[in-house]
Every structure is written in C-alpha cells, then in structure tokens.
Length: 298
Image 1 (cartoon, rainbow, N blue to C red):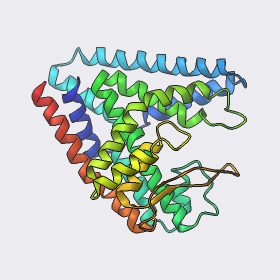
Image 2 (cartoon, helix red, strand yellow):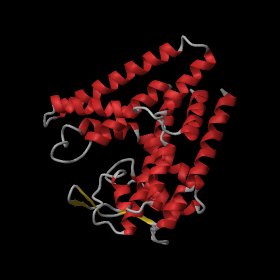
Image 3 (spheres, helix red, strand yellow):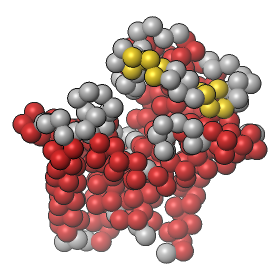
Image 4 (cartoon, rainbow, N blue to C red):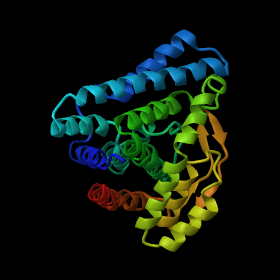
C-alpha cells in the first residue's frame, strides 16, 4: 500500500490544486479524439481497441516515470511522484467548479461546463440539484476512486484510472454515435468505480448530521439508477441533506426519466448546495486522518 505517496499527493492537491500546465487528462483526451477521427466505426471492436490502446500507453508512460524517479534520492523521488500523482486528484477543482454556481451571474452557463444535460431551460431548483448530483458523484470519480487506485498500485494505478474515467466521459454515451463504440469504455468504467462509489457513499453517511436518514436513503435508493455506481453517493448525499435528487432531466434534446432519490424534507436550493460543499472540510480531515494511520502502521 502506498500510504506515504497518497498522503503527500493529497496534500499537494489541497495546497496547490491544478498546476498551470497541460493536464495529463487533456493529453488523454487528445489521444481519444485523434483515434476517433481516424478509426471510428459504429461497432464495439474499434471502441475496445481504443480502450486497450489508451490504457496500455498510459501504463507504459507511468511505469517509465516511476522507473526514472527510482534513480533519484528517496525523498526527492517521493516528492516528484506525489506531484505527478496529485494531477489525478481533483478535490480543489471539483469544489471550486461546483461552488461557482453559488456566485455565478449566469449559473446555467457555469453548470454547462460541469454536466452533459441540457441547461437552457433549467429552473433554479434544477440547477442546484444538478450541482449537488455533480458534487456527490464526482467525489467518487475525482477524489475517492483515484485515491483508492493510488493506494493500491501507486502512480500507474491512478494514471490508468484517469484514462478509464476520461474514456467514459468522452465516448461512453448511449447515443446513436457511441452506443457500440463506447460500450467497452462504459463497462470498464463501471467495473473500476464499483468499490469507490460505495466507499464514497459510506464517507458521506459518516459525515452526515443525520446518519440514520443518510444510511436509510443509501440502502433504499442507491441501486435505483441506471448506472450501477452513480446512485450510491447521490442517494447518500440526498439522505444527508434531507432533499430529493434525481428525477427527469434533458440530455441532447431528449428527456431521460430517472428515479427520485432521497426525501423531500428540505428544498433543493442554494443553502442545500452550500451545506453539501461544506463537507469538504470533513472529507479532507477524514481522508488525511486515515492516510496518517496507514503511514504509521505501514
């Protein structure tokens, strides 16, 4: 287990956030786009080859970087690896992006950068609901999942996870273009996020003021969504806040019917989103505390 590396990488992300250089995920996105332009076919095989190709390339580069860092003195090697690994963590960026909905003059415009759903005709309630769902779901995708694979496999683990997650965000849609081409990416992402999504939900329950309600909503509603993973952190967040999340939403001009998660005790408004975002402090404390215990015991 890579406790020291994970703890240092998490601290780097907390303190510095995103570095002013081209992010590795952008490089991955460029690779995906270039492959799609050249080899796209409305079949499963080309999409599967893209998944295998990007994962293999990412693994090769990350293992090479680990090998090169092994030539440095131990302390410097750990620091360089931590800085590299921190690019796979997105707590600061995620929090800032969702928090922008609270202060933006045009919240719909700010939300458009966070979600794939149509935002033009959204009400304030729908905007804040989408923000809450993005915050909850991406706590798994952007924080817990990369940290989980960093702990298990070091830099190659977090790098490969980010490749899988990037593939999912770009081609794993059930649209006419990507239904077959993106199917492998969707399946691999579902597998990769199975454990982290449930860990994220448990973390939200642990931080909830009303833990019993959060736990009950998680157990009752966590598996209601079409995604095998997304519903768990969203249901836990809905229960923690005493709000109803989910429900119908418009994607690419088509209304998608989704179940309601949670209980409509309180309105979904700016106050609810602010309350959810305040969990960041507790999440940071709990994660760093667990990592510190791991360092002490390892």
